Length: 159
Image (cartoon, rainbow, N blue to C red; front, top):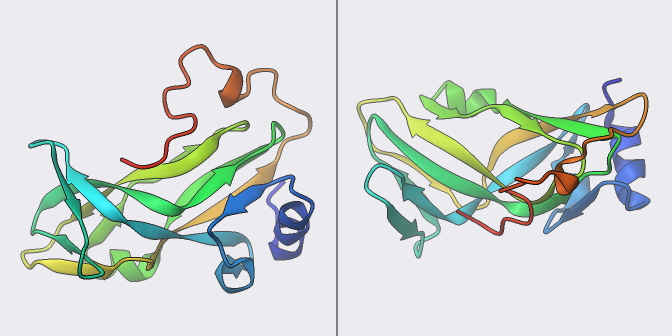
């Protein structure tokens, strides 16, 4: 079942869903929670890491980067979240990878971001880049992410 804003807020208030470094009142939308881009990012093909000292992420034309959210997220074993792209970024030629956040996950979300335009693009650090939608499972999963043998992204703090 897709959760709407009042149910998401209730789960956050009751510490069922834990979101650190988040202003829930500002970031909560009708059926999701916006997450913001952090200050460091990297170009995987050359393994170069950048830190935005001026408060902006610089995305070169036709280039792929990895970045992370400011927020830390922890999901219970009966909630899965889906990463949705902000349409305002897509309309500017900035594509954020979509995916899911498994029940039991804990950490910052690391995601791909690509500038598909011919011009350099800039995103302010702290700008919302994705919206998570939350779905309640009909029972706890028997294979939560935090109990997997190879949960390589569990507890990640950045790129």
